Image (cartoon, rainbow, N blue to C red; front, side, top):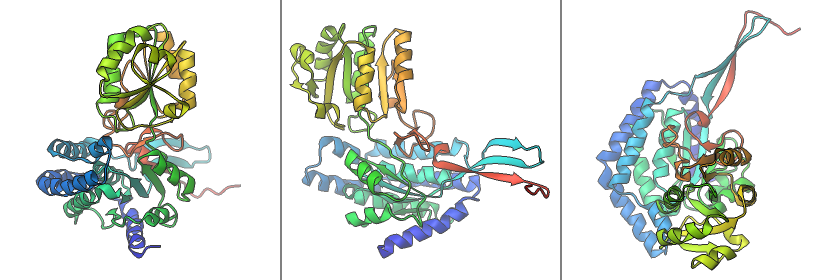
Length: 412
């Protein structure tokens, strides 16, 4: 194993023992220090980010990825506020989940405890560096972060600022950034069973699947977002249009943006022209009926199975809600789906039948977010079922253990 990586992992493993008993006040003091430091060192962050943006532009990064990489004063302020918002949230560590009194006098208490050491692998989103560090601090966890090479200067600046802010408050080794961009480092990280308790990949489907298929460390699969919007025959079409615009156009590079719009056969001729006008800068792939009404390229199986993270969308006309559900089961990554309808029975069918982590009725999929759910920031959006799914907040970042009190009991 790379010597520097092993040093960081060993430090995190030792720090995890101290974090299990760290006082909530110390965690909150550290969060406040980070929040303040981000604002105080705003110019340092912007200077570092400008270098990354320049390099990214020269390397032909897409507009959507460029947006993910960009930090400005507004985003830094939002990051600072997000960190500070965690202070008011309950500390999950030590929370009693349930208590059991056995007939033999044993008292069993299930309590929430930190997971331990997280290894986080992510791409060109420097805000993730701060979000995850803050969540790990509050939940009593340590983290070793491996960001993408596109954001290396920004990530280094953010980590330096955070480490300086928490020095003397939090044990050394709790937060660390892997600066080595050698691909082999990722391979070593996902096989570091002696040091890591869990690995979380955040990024494109390629990164996520590489980690899922190759890691020996337990993995929480997050992020892959082929999300769907279904416009039912009983939909308020004005509402549907506004939700479609929000779910695709507000920020197409994120995992909770929609990739496919399914439209009931009774309303597509009315709905498609205003949608095409609103989606003037979006490349549209559509089925035969779609292409007869608006200008679009013919959609293929590959289109419906693609997460674009860009100003591209698929459209398919369906005969009823059941066909919409079947399509979603075939192509969804089980992230987020939404139905627009004023028919409650249809909405109930859609929401109960689908197996995705987040299912909406008359709302945008863009709300699949830890902050929007009231969790503070989020570790990611889990699309699996073990051990948690949907936005991963403080409680979801913890495990649990049983404390058993006795007075001399022995098992017969």
